[in-house]
Length: 352
Image (cartoon, rainbow, N blue to C red; front, side, top):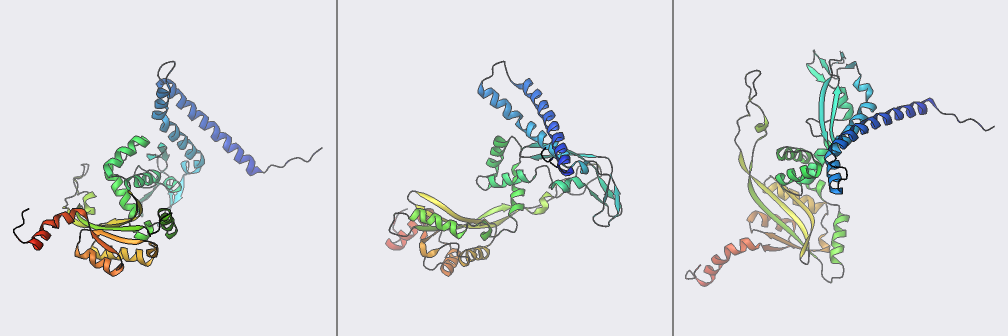
């Protein structure tokens, strides 16, 4: 007779917990199938009809499954009766459960969690929110990350439309702007720059089979953009029970300056690095200096060409950091000076 296999109590308990979760997930899936049965058109739907119906109901399924998993794995937080105040250490007793619905990339997740309030500190807390790592607002981190990625490629209004079409979830353009600014706070040009190895790989790909070094273009420009202060999001005090009015504020025009490095490869360009911020020319010069000092751009492997509008402040920074670069006036601003150059060369009798 062979030796009996020994199973630990932890393994038995884990198996039972997983079996219980599987049963709860099956129940949730059966509920979703009932909805699918109702909404699926006809007795012999086409593939397009099936995919459209499943697509429209997908987040009801994935959101519901997520809700079940969270409730099962954090059951102790759902039934918690006591906790301690993080500020004063007092033992707090749970109040009635408070409902909260958060939005994620897999759908809406509804939470029923106990609320604790410290009268001494006048501070409330939801331990389940902390355990789940929830952030302020409905849209959670996965949605915010997706939105921030999208708005780096397209304008905010376009990103809002695309986000809704691709995910089935609403994410307002103003909220996208706030999330992106929050994510970008404190970042420097080196935080968003590709590694030197990645840039060298792109240069090598463009240089393959060519005798001369490839051309890297540095484009620099600036423009005035309308901005609004942070106080624009605040509320003015009003009568109790009445909705407060939006704070009074006045916007201002500020300089947005930036630069972009890209490789010329025939009729196309290969992006390398871009940095655009609402800041002054000194700050832009500092960012360019960081790029040079970090060795992100291997100048010995390329020919550098600076394309700009001929502004004096641009020439100052280019001459200080990249004195060997070839400076080129862009086509639009060059056209503006053609008549002036012709007058200077041929005299005032030249007609426009």
